Amino acid sequence: MPNLTLAERVSLIGPMDYRLLKFLYEKTATHDWIKLSQISDELGISKREILSSLSKLYDLRLVSKELVLGENAYRITFTGLNVISTKNLYVNKILNKLGIMIGTGKESEVYIGYNFDGDPIIVKYHKLGKSYRNYKKYREDTDSSWIRRTVHNAEKEYNALKCVKSNYGQVPSPLGSSLNAIAMEYIYGKELYKIEISDPESALNDILSTVRIAYKECNIIHGDLSEYNILYSLDSDRSYVIDWPQSTNIQNEEILLRDITNILYYFSKKYNIIKGVQETLNYVKG
Image (cartoon, rainbow, N blue to C red; front, side, top):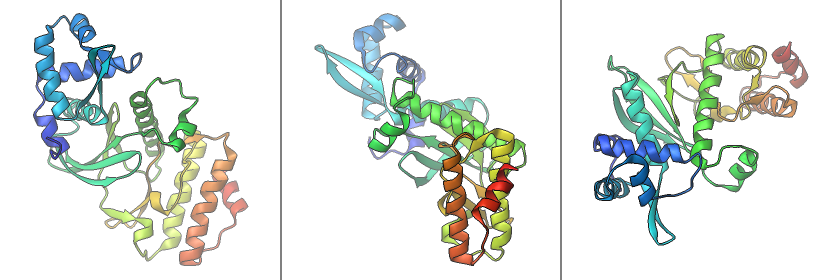
């Protein structure tokens, strides 16, 4: 079943399957692998019944399996986490139908979805891998597993979006979240680097005012600001700052300097708009 879409995998999950996925997620706080006998004992369900469900979840690639001290042990995969998150968004009346994947990166997958009015929304699933970059980035994280770190990353981005949006910054409106998933407003547009815009001065002002709101009102710095993390709306001709999971607190002045330098360099190179770095820093912090 490896070629099934996420929506198809979600549709195949029954109550017992969902219960096991939730149990395995909860155990990621303290365990790397959970033995079959432990699952049976803690849930009070026979091994035969559990094995039937686990075999299905394994075939769907929602759990992984390994022999631990002579006994099969299991843990939830990132796809399994996506399934729980999707079901929770449905229960909370945020997501009615999940569509196709429209974007993927090293740390996330982005899908089109539809709310209960039939309007398109975006669902972003976080997924942290065990790369050297991530090891350095999260080595002081107290979360015990990459699954937990992924959930923490999603929560961090959701909170950043909520704060910046509530203070009238130009970010997609967050609609809800669950574990590693964030549902947000769908914006019909393109990344800044893919498009020629007619009013670049206004676009830059949108970006810098949003950076200022994040700094002044939310005490955060984006942390990865560039033309790749700006979405330009083809409906409103406005710029939206996206991808906030790496946001950091305002004590990290060197990161703010890097963000400002990156975006000013892009606009100076492509549109010949010249703004001083120090002048812009004073505006953001002032």
